[in-house]
Structure formats: structure tokens, C-alpha cells
Length: 356
Ligand SMILES: Cc1cc2nc3c(=O)[nH]c(=O)nc-3n(C[C@H](O)[C@H](O)[C@H](O)COP(=O)(O)OP(=O)(O)OC[C@H]3O[C@@H](n4cnc5c(N)ncnc54)[C@H](O)[C@@H]3O)c2cc1C
Image 1 (cartoon, rainbow, N blue to C red):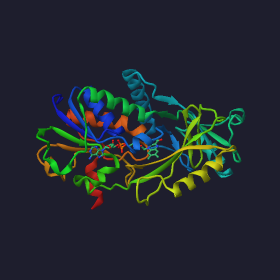
Image 2: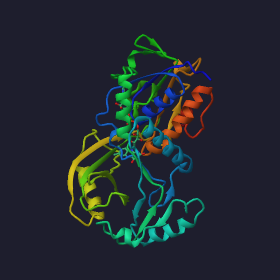
Image 3: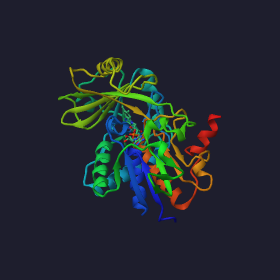
Image 4: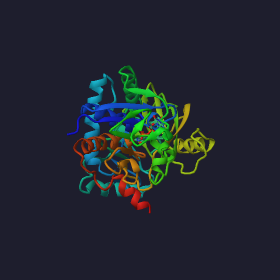
């Protein structure tokens, strides 16, 4: 194992934080550079891990493998940083019509779904100030990780240790794997959606989306469950709820919009059977990708990677970073340590080829 590698991680959102942390745990020499958390995806995300999604009621990609790794990773960080991060929050899925309720019954009997799906009990539903026309399913093992708290805590720790620089990485000052006079064995970019502006990654199929969210004050809403229809309500504590999100492909900036607010309020009112107070309206851009799979590895089309892998990427976690990042950081750090490859589904080199 190549333990003496000197690694620079660029970006300290969820992806950069977990990757840097796992490299540090392996004993590598790790430095991090990040320009700040203002308005980033990882700070706005609800941090939900939802094992079964959509109107078609389908298990999330690889969820049986991802969920146990995510849970044990966030629980280990809770101990390491002395924080509460992981919350088990079974989701109440409001059906949109009788067809969905019927499909739910069928799905529950499909192999691998019984572990996750059930119907919510009438006495549970009755406690919630929600409209319930077509019935309510229960998604077991859904959870929330407080990833914004986690990345802020890593930031403080790494600033104190002198490991993290608060600065913008200047792409035009990179020569091979040398940055600002320092030679690195590996430089790994975890810039979220802003990787689109990195000249090294112009051939990657980013297709970023803007998400907008309202933070609501709902004094009568119980706080032990996620509520999900077109929007989700996620309890934040103190009777505050995260309600979102929009998924806009066409947008001009990363600011909250009137269009977003109108859409969110319409969907919130389709669920809530009570008045509500909007406390904040927020927006951020997700690092979504055309094929909806992460993009990980060392692109062979980069000059710096001709002799050995030096410049890497760990990105494309889209709408599901909370569950994907711990597992894929484990796979990637092992691949770097043992100079081994990555599965085709996530290998960045296959994403470049598929563009041609
Ligand atoms: C509204 C919304 C709701 C979401 N809800 C969920 C959810 O419930 N569950 C879930 O799993 N996922 C959710 N997501 C998705 C989740 O936020 C992402 O998958 C994940 O946070 C992406 O993390 P990242 O580190 O790749 O990117 P980012 O969070 O964007 O972090 C990138 C970091 O890199 C830094 N950076 C960029 N360029 C440079 C540079 N040149 N120099 C220095 N630093 C740089 C940025 O400042 C930032 O700190 C949601 C996203 C949104 C927008």
C-alpha cells in the first residue's frame, strides 16, 4: 500500500470532506483547499437517505449496499466529532391516486422490498395535519444525516490542524500535479457543480439542476417522520421543517426565485391541512450528471495522467450524495491505496468515452 502519498483535495463539501477524512484515516498526507460553504449543495441538502423512490416505487440504485455503509460511517463520525448526525426517520409516503396504493401492495410482495415497505397505521396518520385522500405508505429504514453540521465541524477541525486553506483553487496555476510550488502525488477535485468550469473536466457530462427549498414553522407537526409526496417535509428540530425541493434544469442563477416559491407553496398546500409560516427560502445547485451515476477516478485524457494517475475527480453525486459518498469514498480510497480500478458504473474514463 502506498501510504506516503501526498494528496490535495480541492473542495470541502460532502464529497471532499468524506474523501479527505478517509484518506487521513488511511495515513496519507492530506491537504484541503476550499473557498467556502456559502450557498453550496451540501449545506442546503436535507441529507435524506430514501431507500425507495418515485411514483414507480423503485429501490434506489445499490441501496442495500449503500445504506449500511452510510449508517455506520455517520455514526462513527458522531463518536469522532462528538455530534448527533444520524436520525432514523421512517417516511410517510402519501399516495397520489388509487393506482399508486395498489402498486404499493404489489411492490411489498416483490423480493427485496418487504424490508423497506409497509402501510402506515391509521392512528399514526391521524396525528399529522395532512390531507390523506388515497392512503399512506410507510418507507422503513429511511433516515437523515446532518451533513451541513458534519462539514462545518470537519472544517473547524482541519483549520485548527492547519490542514485546510480557505481559498479558491486557481486552475490556471496548476502545472502537472504541482500547485503553488507544492508537488502532490494526487490532486483530487471535489468541486460539486462548479467542476463544470474546471478546464480539466470539460468533456464530462454534467447536467446540473437547481433546487429550491422553503423552511417552514409547523408547531403541530410531529417530528419523528419524513412526509413525502411531490415535496418532502424533513424535521429540523424546534418545529422547523425543510420543505422541498424543486428540480429546475433551466435557470439563470443560484438564487431563490419567484417561480420556485410558487411551485413549492402549491405542493406544500397539496399536503398540509393547516396554515404555515415560511421562515426562509433557499437555493443551491446540485452536481447532477446525465447518466445519474457518480464520476470517479483519474481521467486518462489528461496530460498529467499519462505516466501515472495524478489528477482525479470525485463528483457527480447528484441528488443522493448522503448515501453514495461514504460508500464510494471507501471504494476510491482503497483503489488509490492499492492502485486498483473502479467499477465501470462509476469509472470517469467510461463517462468521457460515452460522450464521443
Ligand atoms: C435543495 C437540495 C436538496 C438536496 N437534498 C438531498 C438529500 O436529501 N439527500 C441527498 O443525499 N442529497 C441531497 N442533495 C444533493 C447533495 O447536496 C449533493 O449530492 C452533495 O451535497 C454534493 O456534494 P459535493 O461535495 O459534491 O458538492 P458541493 O456541496 O457543491 O461542494 C463543493 C465544494 O467545493 C468548493 N469549491 C468548488 N470549486 C472550488 C474551487 N475552485 N476552489 C476551492 N473550492 C471550490 C465549494 O465551495 C464547495 O464547498 C440535495 C441538493 C439540493 C440542492
